[in-house]
Length: 261
Image 1 (cartoon, rainbow, N blue to C red):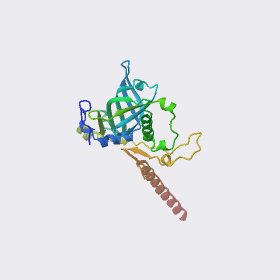
Image 2: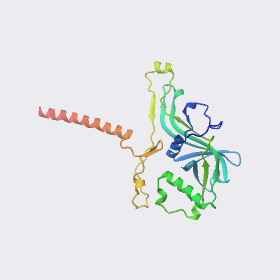
Image 3: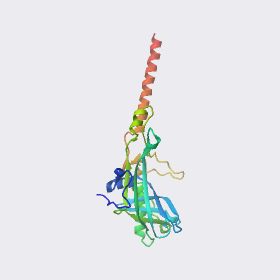
Image 4: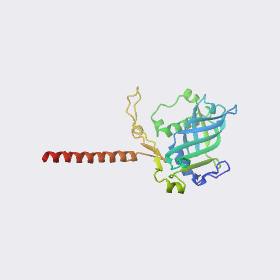
């Protein structure tokens, strides 16, 4: 299943990197934690606000405080964007250096869920909270009415002609003559991986962290929340330790051999 293209979402540069596949779009959205939302305010000024969000089906819920400018007018036309950085692409020529990334852009009207729709508003806030940490709302105190009223939630639909993804996942594309004549210059990709560390208790918390916290995925990438048995850095570390151990073994063997003689 794919979103229909439109003049708004048609990619004109590097179109081969574009995707309108709903599965690809959802994967990127579910891997991201922060969106940047662009809009034009009442005074005609272009602004961008970073916002946390959550997705349910083809609906995005955006979170903000009542004082947030983007949320003051009930509804607003927005350009919603998330980007996941996957690698630094270093070419032989600066012109061809780039980045590997996954990006989704959504256009549409973001509509405020009014406090009169209490159940829907609470549902949107639950989607946002559980997007950050799975099943978190099952463990926490429900929001009071005053807390719900002080929070604004926008709803943005994923619709045909308003959604696109763009992905770069390749090495450097140097000119042929540079490849032939600049063999002494390194070219390649430095991968970027988002890694989540072990949980740290709050200064006033003595509670035991629940399983969804202690077992929070080490990696949150490509739509897969997972704990890899051995990631690249772990492998490199183990390899280095192995080389070091071998070196120590050789030195120790030489020392013992000299003593014996």
